[in-house]
Image (cartoon, rainbow, N blue to C red; front, side, top):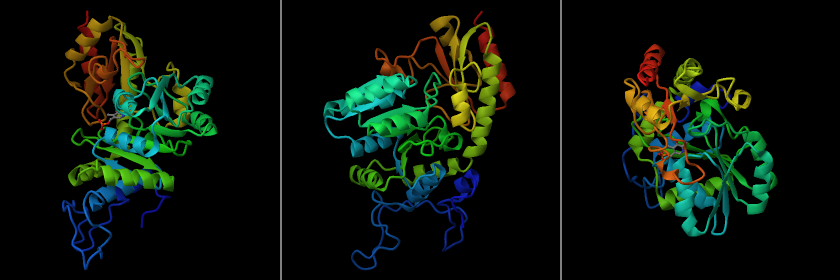
Length: 386
Ligand SMILES: *Cc1c(COP(=O)(O)O)cnc(C)c1O
């Protein structure tokens, strides 16, 4: 029997993954059935009735996710944004206000500003490393939710979850941490004092760039009941194959994150001081302003880093297009290395807002290829900038 005291990988591999009692299949089958036979009206076997309300494969994933975040409840959705939407609708009412870091995922900002804005939800974005500014913004807006992401995207800013949770709780706000970049292996926001963890499981948790998904993870029973009701009644659930692929990815999360982190660290160190690179943004570098905090708050520094090219936008574009092992693509967290040009790709939706990203910035999602090949690829593309 697997219990809470088992280590991270033991739980990742076993929680919710009990073998099939009828056949002994070590990997539980994927349950595609949309509906469940009843032994007499309302007499359900195992509580399953209809696939939107409950599905054994989705339940397996939810148990696995809750265990890894040290939470009592997890809810799996069709995408990260569907998870965010369900949580916010469960929590917010017209007239409420959201306070958000000024570097959160662009789609999160767009969701609150353009979808929730129409339902009279206010939004303020601000720099979260100024704790006094956060305290006064919470007081002046009366924010119901404080939303943060650490490390952030694409500048890898590190935010003090424990300090912000204390400040937010003193003013009655709910603290939501988007833990997509760090994953529960590297960072445990609930243990640091956050109320809710959000994931785009599309990224490191799925880990293979082959399934879109999201999750809300939390321990408060009353809020969990509301989120569960939104999952069921609004219906943006993850499908069985998506849930199964995500579960399969999560089993190798720890070994993947160790390798992602080691290779990203090697690249960041090699690039710092390169004449074509004005600045490297990686929390593992002692030069990074969030380094000490990240070292306290995280197990390791993760697989994402960003570069500011000395030659500005033209150099940034040429560098991104000159890479051969890294593919130019949106998204992150897969086994393959990806390069992204935030100002025109992932962060195009926040152009013209306070969240706008410089056009000299390139973001790398460092994959699991041989690090020598990744280093050589980055060096050859920088060398061609001339
Ligand atoms: C991708 C991403 C999201 C949105 O998730 P989807 O699965 O694309 O809907 C939210 N937050 C972060 C940090 C992300 O990287």
